[in-house]
Amino acid sequence: MESIFALAGQNLSSPIILSFVLGVFAALARSDLSFPEAAAKAMSLYLLFAIGFKGGASVAAYGLSLNLGMAILAGLFLSAVLPFVAFFLLKILTSLDTTNAAAVAGHYGSISIVTFVAGTSILEAQGIASEGFMVAVAAAMEAPAILSALWLVARSKAGQTNGGAQFDRRLLQEILFNGSIVLLVGSFLIGAVTGERGLASIESFIVAPFQGVLCLFLLDMGLVAGRGLRDGGRVLKPGIFVFGVVMPLIGAMIGLALGAAIGLSAGGVALLMVLSASASYIAVPAAMRVALPQADPAIYLTLSLGITFPFNLVIGLPVYVAVAQALLGGSS
Image 1: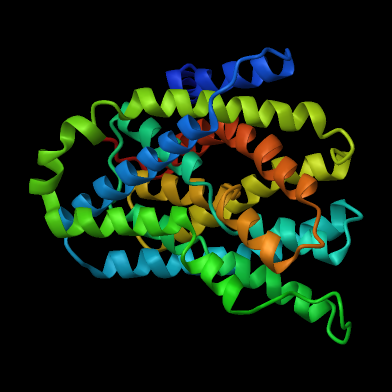
Image 2: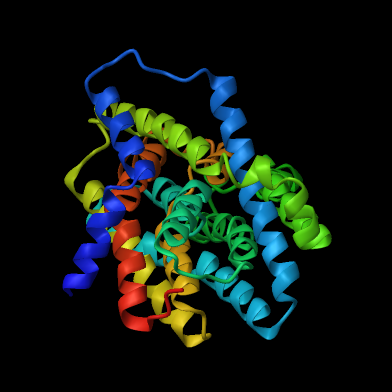
């Protein structure tokens, strides 16, 4: 137990976590610190490309295997099932209507790629090995949660002419060709095709600057999350706040059990816990605007970005990594 707290304390003092904390503090203090939108978008594109490429190169070195297939199937299962768990918990803890509860639930089955990137950085800093194909699992977990959320609405509002979900070609295009999914999967495929040779040729671009860019990006995310906390008082009811903290823990425990069952390493289990605990604030909100325009963005964005994202970054990630390492061992 002491080792878990020691590792958690060490991770909490890392530059990436402290950069996020600085952003939250600046926003709550109403500082005029801000990033240009173009700069923030450029950093997110860089991070997506870098993590996808490195994951693809790792898979090329690792090779296709049964473990890869099982991990992707596990990710698909988690993404499809976690929204039902979240929906059930929301109905217990809050008074949200079906549409808003389903919209929120979809966010908690999908993933936060920034939380995943932060998790991989913590593992690298601790020298904990993980399967390179986990980035493919992250990509696979984007869309199923959206479909589950829409099914929840369609089932609950069957027979209502104006309340159902718009499940059409436009929505499917929004899910499958969302920019973050295209870049993540595309860079993963490039890395897989070019392998270690390709990684070596652009190592100075996607390896050396990675930690610094991540610190700046998380500083910006801290500013966004802090503003959400500062201005989201009307939606931060006690039950909603409790959900935003409890649901990540439930997701992480399910990810822990499933990751251990399919034989992932300690690092792989930690990343599956991170993915299961995170909540989308890019792909799913974009899809919800098309599929469920009547859902309130202030609710699902404040929950995913203002509560769960900072909780995972400051408290969750160190705990998930520490628990996986303590239970499964295997640092390298």
